[in-house]
Length: 482
Image 1 (cartoon, rainbow, N blue to C red):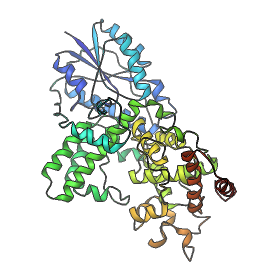
Image 2 (image 1 turned 60 degrees about the horizontal axis):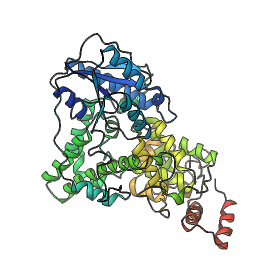
Image 3 (image 1 turned 30 degrees about the horizontal axis):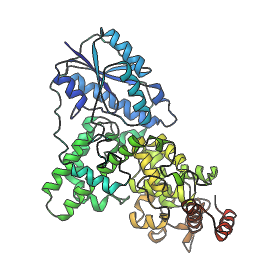
Image 4 (image 1 turned 120 degrees about the vertical axis):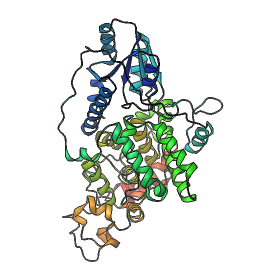
């Protein structure tokens, strides 16, 4: 009987898993293998919270496999060496099935394995393979709207693959144990595993999807799917999410519900777009996509960076978002845009510093989406926000947290601030929170910072500095800015 090693990476599920399905359909013995790769576990971009979520997901997958007559095999070490060793133990003549992955490290790793061993890669990390949606001449899209139109024009995304009735795994294969990691209270906010992913998907479809278009940007509301950690580790098939969006579009009772379902599908396509960008332009992990933005003169003020990380910038919506991240490992998507814009354009700190910090703390930290989001906010990426688009943190807070409930939840020292001042407490006629002591005063003047970033970015775009611009840059360099 043929033996197939199902090499699990970021597809911790039994439902709609092409690599697993092909192995079971072949009538093979299937060895579900997860390799604890020290290069990933010890990466400077790794997150203890994300590792706990991964390990809990692996335990849940092991439990699900046992119901199917199988079990999870864990090994530690370099993937190529581990696979060689396991194949030797199994007597040779094995094939390896795995889901495609698109980070530079993953593609280099898989190429190395494929050069030595029979590795077959299957879709499943994305809805459509990351290099499939391209222009007529074969070149990749670098702007989202034409990409999304091309993505949609390909039509049907296919049917869901069933959960296998049984997985034939031989006994007697040695396995390592999962590392022990201390849990913290925030881990209970996102229980790990495929069953939880399915529960959250159903809850979203039943109770939240109809209002998604209106509620998704409101930081004070429970209006998002909260599925991103499960998509990150493949506990939820992205194809299943897309099919559910399409089904909701077909069954929509009115235009508002249709718009919400379309908006959700559009967000899933954004995820696909960022995978495509990373697959075609792997250098974006190291530098700005736009060449003219690679020589921006960042301020990189360490004190400002530290204040941002702590959630002590003096801008309540920024601080609330950063404290939410530190406490839970998750941040509302609108808040991610606000904090990243503030970081790169108000503080003028290199986007790569913020991208790395997010990866070190986000439960759903994903190289493609995180890089894409940061480069969008910084104005350095493919389909990026224009360099002259600078979010005003006060106005963003007023619009997307109108009563300040999000701010008060995460910045409790502002509980007593009236609604009209909650996003700018330094403007209160009577200082009820002792701004500057109990809560920090703003570390940067937004109006001045906006002028500064427009000059700095504008000089990169225009490739020259007029005499008046040089004078203004000198003036702002001496202003009270980090």
